[in-house]
Picture (tube, rainbow, N blue to C red):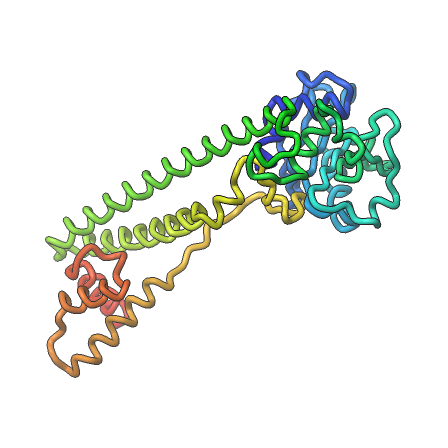
Length: 334
């Protein structure tokens, strides 16, 4: 959620005005995946980086020396790409360790920031933390950057729980977060509908092919469709799991749980993990069923019905499909 908030024009204006003193309309979000495999939260840059330095923003739960080393490496990537040192803003959500705070000083021109020595890897390095804004949150109307810091640091699930819920900037940020959350849920629901539709079509194709299984190419086609169903089912299971109540609470408008690990160390891709465990368990069930028959003729319909009652054979639409797949597997082994 934090990255999506930072990508909005509203958040960009707050940050650029506070850090650079203006010209927010000339900045826009740029790619943050670096050749070193790291990925930052957000980078704002202009078409003329020499005149207006890029601004790197990192939202991090715990800011310590290890994290700062990651920031330095990312700044070196920015220098390599833009040929200029960036300005860095770090938002310390939960804690800024003493090892970092002891080297920081209050920024005189902008006292809600701490600043760190940063030559030559950054033009300036600013920290927004609970310590830096503590003496600036008792005003009727908060400075926009202080409000942004409070939004991330307080981690309140709803506006009603926010101590500064009457502040216009806080209200604006929660409205942005609600809109983002609604859009993400709509996109997820659409994806799930597509998966279920493709899954249904694969099943129908398998049923039609099973009616005339004599052709060898038809057998191979069924194998491919069965594999496709397995992929779809595994992905659907993971997708639905990510939408379960235990995860929904962390995706509410003001949640910053996605910063629990270093944003600078996050990988740029999140591969889908597929499993063949389901197919192996189906094969084991069939094997045990055959053993229990003690040499009697195999009853595929009974095997299928018993397996379904015990949660097996979810990839098969009927007993004929199960029989054909098992026979093909057996023939390939022979």
